[in-house]
Length: 256
Ligand code: NDP
Ligand code: 8X3
Image 1 (cartoon, protein in one colour):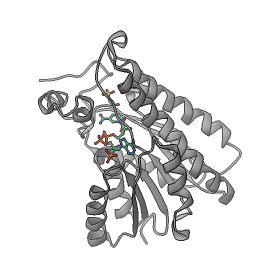
Image 2 (tube, helix red, strand yellow):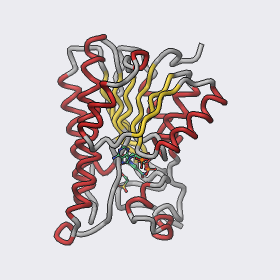
Image 3 (spheres, protein in one colour):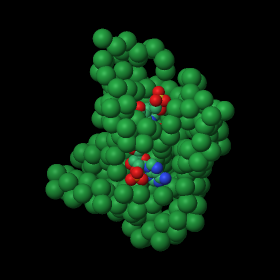
């Protein structure tokens, strides 16, 4: 029997990078998948792949987690057989730009805060009550080393990840009298589309972020998420900070 057979997992931001790798890892472990992101065509391609490889049952939807009414509508229209969510992976997130704060773009700030903080809150508010009611559930937030440290020009992105850290800790306190577990998996440098999004499609600038050392892969992070989700019920993996071996802090990376 696969470890997560009959468990339903909701992954936000499953169309790329870490979210996509989590979908693959949960599929391999036998879970049923609820996958959301804005680019539905990518989710459709991924589910076809997972159905073929693991016979995974999936339900996908195009969802922008920044849109509160869309998030409400998504959950209120979920088919009955998809309403029992056992594991929530709050992964959707992004960074925009690396500007000094006094030169920064207000639109970039809104996008990061609305996605990384408010989107995570909207989804959690919709999912967690059912977990509490059923007396079972695991929430895994994808934080960042940027939630532990601030780096130059990281101002608002780092603030959003510090907020994720605070929300993770606060939710854990609020749920300590229930069997629901709250975890955060906090990566350092992972090679995904993250930097391409941050630098608005500037590929050479994005690629330079991952040059001269071996960065983490999205699978490395999915591994930790699966670990947190598969511990015995009395074990709560509160926090996992994962760095490439060549990274010691947000600003210290040994490049050759
Ligand atoms: P990617 O850009 O590869 O993936 C980001 C995912 O988030 C995409 O699937 C994207 O889907 C989704 N997303 C973005 N905005 C929204 C939105 N408004 N609504 C729904 N989905 C959204 O980057 P990563 O995989 O690296 O990023 C995943 C998480 O990991 C983020 O929270 C990021 O902050 C965090 N992280 C990344 C690190 C790294 O070095 N890469 C390190 C530490 C943390 P779509 O565009 O289709 O909506
Ligand atoms: C993403 C990693 O160091 O670019 O959270 O902030 S970093």
